Image (tube, rainbow, N blue to C red; front, top):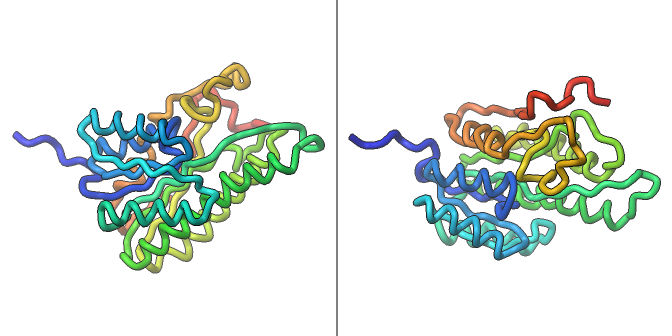
Amino acid sequence: MSGAARALEGRVAVVTGGGSGIGRTIAEAFAAEGARVAVAGRRREKLEESVAAIAAAGGTALAVPTDVANEEQVRHLFAATQAAWGRIDLLVNNAGGFAGAPTDEFPLQMWRDMIDTNLTGAFLCLREAFRIMKSQRAGRIINIGSTSAKVPRPKSAAYVASKWGLDGLTRMLAIEAREFGVAVSIIHPGNTVPGVWSGQEDKVKGEGLMDASNVARIAVLMASLPADANLYESIVLPVSMPFLGRG
């Protein structure tokens, strides 16, 4: 008796920030469901670890070192993926980081670095993906936002601005892309490990933490919906996290 059909069999996915944390967990989950996955990120050794883990589990993956804030490197990422597998069905825009400081002490370079990675990088990737998906008249883009795009934390000006910007960018592209059969969605994770809080768990002590696999399950669900359906937005967080009523 043959096994159950896999949800993403034959699909081609690009996952940024795929060398660790949420990105790696999503890349592994997509590959387990049959997708061929290009994992992108700045650290080649981490990408190779992701590819090795996927291959060991019987999946197919490609490591493409990429700084998502670099336009030429982003173009190379999508060209290399197309060259390998002929099309691109899915993009998960996950690359990003967090740095905090009181607003009146926030260094300009820290601001620029975070906006470049979290927002400009996401724009460059979704622009390239949309060009391809528009010509295919099919595809799905999933952006990884944050609960900070809904209820901000103090002392995190650049991170909050980048995630609110990504939320707005998602809304805009969802409208622009739908006439071409391209679905655009966003996931807002709460406190997740491995992820932004890895090694800094003490900073969210008492709020609760969840495993990144919970985010990956939502990403697989979004990615596996029929082409005419879109789960536009999801907020996934620990039950104990004070998201509601946080101020």
